[in-house]
Length: 125
Image (cartoon, rainbow, N blue to C red):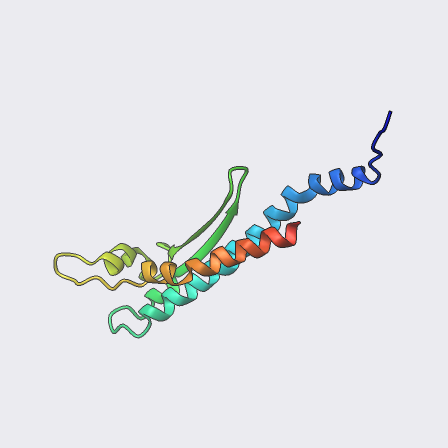
């Protein structure tokens, strides 16, 4: 009777056991880097507006890692100067034209997030 001996399988199993944690850490880094880029891009798109001198500096980001996933939140902090104006600035009102800056910044950096997550997966392997 013929048989197959597998040597070193324990090392592979142990490495697979830590893959999820490595991926979580690397993916969180990718989300953080892209969140920073989106924040900076949005700030640059809205800087220099005569009536919104403090508004660009109200745009912040936060990254949360939970059991369900990783979340990057970018937008105006309502606790900062002119932060509560975020929705009005982005979407406008019946009397004020919109000044899109957050949406375009997200769109412009979407591919960067995908690339960062691809790198995260490769590095976790």
